[in-house]
Image (cartoon, rainbow, N blue to C red; front, side, top):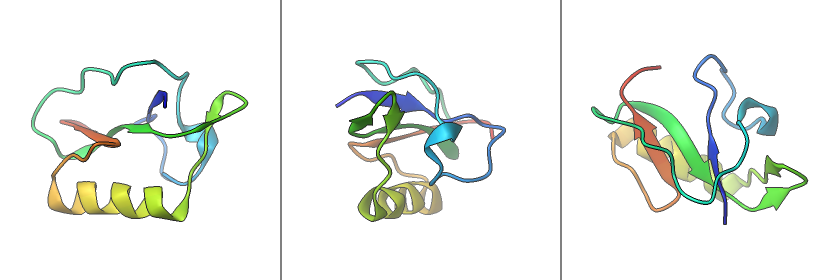
Length: 77
C-alpha cells in the first residue's frame, strides 16, 4: 500500500484531499512524534481511502504519541 503525507496546514484527517501525492515508502518525519505526518492506505484514483478503522488508528497514534504500522508522526503541526 502507498504512503500519503498529511498536509500540516489541514484540519481534517478524514478528508482525502488533505494528503499529498503517494509514495512507495513512508516519508522521513523526524522527532519528537507529536503530530500526524503520513498514513498508509489503499489508493483511490490518487487519493487515500480513509476508513473508520484508519481514523481510529490515526487518533490512537496522535493521542498516545505512538506510531503504528500505518500511521507516522512528526515533530511540528
